[in-house]
Image (cartoon, rainbow, N blue to C red; front, side, top):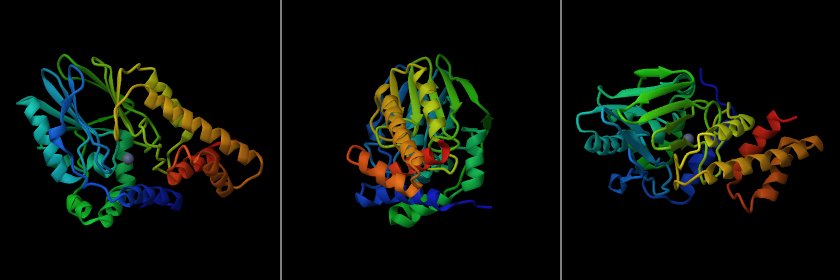
Length: 305
Ligand SMILES: [Zn+2]
């Protein structure tokens, strides 16, 4: 049974709408941009194109791990080709930072021999929400519809609860189920050997999106502490430019300010709608995405005392 209540739908529509408003470039992975960022890690940058993820390819002596697939099988095939160039005959693994379409719905392009890794929480997101967001994206443009035609979620070959260690041969990768931040099934990928962190949508330059009814502001703050404690030298977010811990610090400052301002309104007896207005007016100049700001205020208001 699908559960979709209106604030969640509003966030999804805002995500899709933001992508539409700027008349963006087509949501295609550009494998020619592949570049090595550390001893074992290469990325295909998203060039900040909406509905394109930063793709990671982590290369060990025995196996290769791909992080995120692009939107639909056509993008997935481009990512696969780039990975195969680096992997040769080595075993391929695939993991996604979360189940949203541009991160996950290219997985079908990978051969049956590729081992798909999912957290239990990510599997829950897929079984509860399925293709809802894919259908919204597909309704927004002809290219989205074409890319997503026939796309569906791939089953996990390897499932984990809290974390999973993968030794690719000379490079250790840890996958962490991060709990309900952007989605319930957020997974962070920590390339321990190189100190490179794939942070998903948990820390990026763009404003955080509370995209799930399970998204929690207080939990998100704990997740940021957890990621910072890894001391990454490079943070690759799932969208936008890579950077350092300032990406984590930026999210922390934003979430703390939202929480503080929202709780002040709540204590003053204001409704959530009033809090969204007031906090939006106070923070909107610095953080222009009012939809995302509203989502954060709602979460803070609901959780806070
Ligand atoms: Zn997402």
